[in-house]
Image (tube, rainbow, N blue to C red):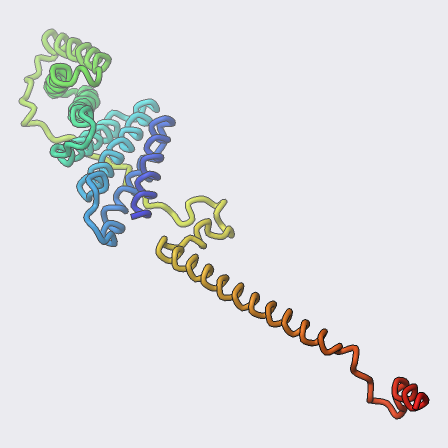
Length: 300
């Protein structure tokens, strides 16, 4: 249970660090939650609480992956990578958010804003993928396809605005799509006259995943190499109580024995003093007569 709690808190901390710095600690957070689900929970000898149940940690793992994929999309977009690549990254992010939404649908213990945000992100990245793919179609002179994808993107952002506007704003994305659609329709009406196909008839946008759950390395940091385990002397509470009771019992027995020895020593010293011992003893180990006997013989 303690290992589960430590892993859960590490995952939560990693997600907070990633949220602040927009780094890829999301994949490490995902790995922590997945490790709890696949490796650690099986060793728990009791029913897990709701927050660490397999369904909950599994959903959290997918949410972390979705955010990690989103970071890759944001970097690719900022670096002005090709629209075909950016569209695949966005579509994969939408896919992850969709999976996360499905896994969280019946999790009443989650904050109320989680589900709307996941659903909104799913639609937003679908619309973003369509926007970038429309640029690909434009480059390939498929102007009807360009309009169809932009129209579908418009429908998606309208869904977000109508259902999830209190949780997330899509004004910038909506304006960008609207401008692109207006320009595309104008060019097609006056110049190209290309037929606008149904979105269902268009080839699906590919997906490119650049993330996967990363389990924690052991040790987590090079600073722990060569260091003793901080918890090597930690024992279960029952063992600690047994050791304490043993030490107390041992101390009582030793103290009792010491008191008995002191009492016997005091008694012996009293008896010896009453017999004038050892002062009354003479050294008879030599070849001469002791001086006390010589003095007595002279007196006689």
